[in-house]
Image (cartoon, rainbow, N blue to C red; front, side):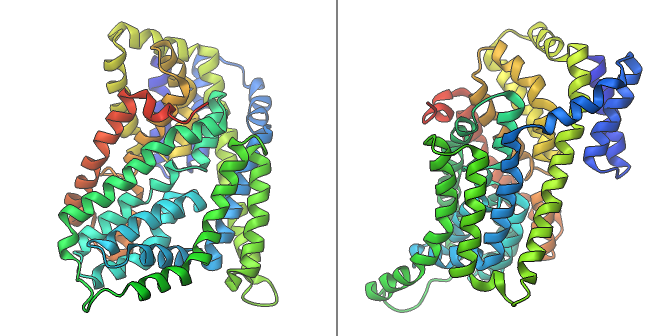
Length: 430
C-alpha cells in the first residue's frame, strides 16, 4: 500500500507541474519502480503490449466517426428534431438540451465535446426562453456526460480491455443508468424550472406540430443510425468493436457527403482534412495514455498491489455493502481530479479484482466505476464540464454551484441504485 501512496503523490505532483497526464503517469511509475528495484528492461515490451490490441483500433475509429458527424451539422439536426418532438410541453427547451446532450454524446464519445456542441446552441436558446443563465449553464454541464453512459462509449471500450470483459456487456451495463438519469433530469427540469420558460402564444396546432416532426425526422434519424449500427453490430455478434468502428467511419463519411454536406464545404476538402487531423491528435493522446499506463500497471503487478489492496480492504471491512460505499466515495473524488480514461487505466486493474473478491460482478463494477467518474466531472472544485460551460456563458463557477449541486443530488439516487441493485446494470447483459 505504501507503493500506491508514493505513486499517487508523485503522479499528482507532476500533474500539478503541468506535465501532460500520460507522461505524469509514466514518469511517476518509473520513479516508484526505481524506489523498489523493479528492472526497467520490462517497460518497452509492456508499453508496446498495452496498445498491441486489435480492439483498441476501435477508439480512433469511433473518434473519427464522431468528429465527422459532428462537423457535418449533426448537432443542429438533432436539436431541431428533438425540439420538434418536445413541441410546446412545459420545460420543452430544457428537455431538448438534456435529450440532445444524451444523444449527441453517444456519437461524439466525449462529455466535454458534448457540452461545447450542445451548449453552443442551447445555452442562448434557454436564456431567450426565460431560463436563468446560471441554471442553464449548470444543466448543460450536468447533461454533458449522459451520452458517455449510453452506448457506444470509448470509456466502455477502455474498461473492457483493461479488465478483460466483453465490450458489448460493459456498454449494456451503463445503458439503464444513463437512460434513467436522462429521464430524471427531464422530470427535475419540468417540476422545478419549467415555470421559467416562456410559453408559446396562440393555440396548439396539431398539423403544424406533425409537419415540424415530419420535416426534421429524416435528418435526425440519419444521425442516430450511427450509434445504433455500432451497438447492434457489436451486441448482435455481427461485428467486432473494431469492425463496427470502421463501419461507423464509412457511414459518417457517406452521411457527410449526402445528408450533411457542410463537411465538404469546399472542393479542396479542407473541412475533411481538418477533422481528420483533429481526430488523429485526439486518438494519439488516448493511445499515448494507454501506452504509458503500462508503466504503473507493471509496477503494481510486480509489487502485488491488487492483492495488497484487497487484503487491506478486507482488514477494514468484510461487508460488501460498506465496501461499495467506500468505493463510491473514492471514485467520485478521483473523477473530480482525473480524466475518465486515465482513471480507468490506472485504477480498474487494481479495484476490479478487489470488487470481485467481495462478490461484485466485474461488469456491474464497470457501471459503478463509469457512473462515479462521470459524476466527478460535474463535482466542484475541479469539474471539467463546469469549466467549459462557464466559459461559454461568461460565468464563474461559484455562480452555478447551487444548480449544479441540485443535479448532483439527482444523480446520487441513480448511483446508489446502480451500486446496490446489480440488476440495473446487468438487466440486458447476456
